[in-house]
Image (cartoon, rainbow, N blue to C red; front, side, top):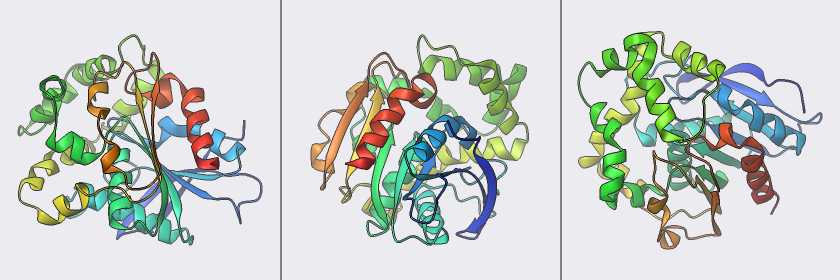
Length: 291
């Protein structure tokens, strides 16, 4: 395994981003892979995958998404999906490559879908973990999925930050555990996400991702991009026991992918694939990237 990923900083799309980077010895011709975290993760949760990608010959960079420390808060408080997608495109441009692969989990997967919809000429391929195509999720949620998404509705309430922070983030810890039945989150992982939200503004930013979903009701631009088929090769991966985004949500999606499309399930795994079964996830991602 390579050395621990290095923390670096850049400016893209008008914001300062911190990111972790792992790369092979010669980085000049190494294909770029952006790895994007979700909620309530940070880029640190992807250190294992970054190292495995680097060992396989890829330059792997995992930015802390806008609002997540140590990246900057969005001064305009724009945490919409399209803003995330534009961040991805700006990051690719910063690294000076014509195209890159985007691997995303949870909200990171939403950013990957958005980037591919906005600029398929800059996104070589995507891997979306633990999130189906936005059209499937937004327009055809099952009753069971609506129940599972109870937290999204709670996050719309003013002052819900106080509830999340109570008793050393006890509610958030229960939520994480419920999403991956049978998995015990390491104490170090829980400490990292609690530390990430120690500053109230950071927690408000993370919840702002969910609150920005209300804008979809009247934002024609968002609908135009998020509902269209994906025109780059795509691999969608989900956990067999995911209790956050239910496995039933991945059915009947073939028509939403206009290029090569692969759907894979990780047996016995919940929502946090990259933490529960890092080797299995890395093997699937690397195999897809090498095809």
